[in-house]
Length: 241
Image (tube, rainbow, N blue to C red; front, side, top):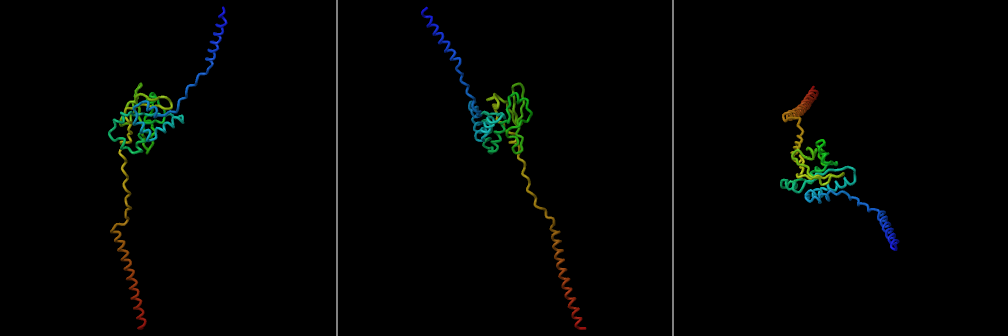
């Protein structure tokens, strides 16, 4: 019975400690940082060439700015390093700076799409390159169930696993580089130089005009000479009479 007060004291301390722990606020979960497309690609481990193109064209920065500072989502198709290695030698080096930018923008849709969304879109789907130089630069989607194919009309490839599928940014892996149909079209022939203004007078007409003028000038001189002779004749006749 001597230990009863001590037991009650210990029990009271335990209850107090449990209440204190229950009242301790839980630390808030850290808020997610801004979206960075490059960070997502680095985690994938096989997009080095694509990262380089996003960087040198500054399209990667444009995507980050868009998805972090507006309510407009975006969808990006990310070719693997093997996809770029499968291109004919020199393909990228033969592109102009403008064409490299167009190539990267051609892989970006100005809207957020899930894989299910891509099966119901109206083709062609505009890309970030659409409208440049008056060209379509559209992508075409087909498939069924969970299989989606993307086509440029000169090549097609399945849309594979997603790297990210959370609004506002969707990122999908593709095993081929989406080369625009516009890159293969022959450039329009240069307009023919403007024809020199047609000479309205033919050589014969010019000659005739010249001759006529010469004759006119000659006849004028003859007329003046004849008038002078006639005048002198009359003057002499008057003197003799």
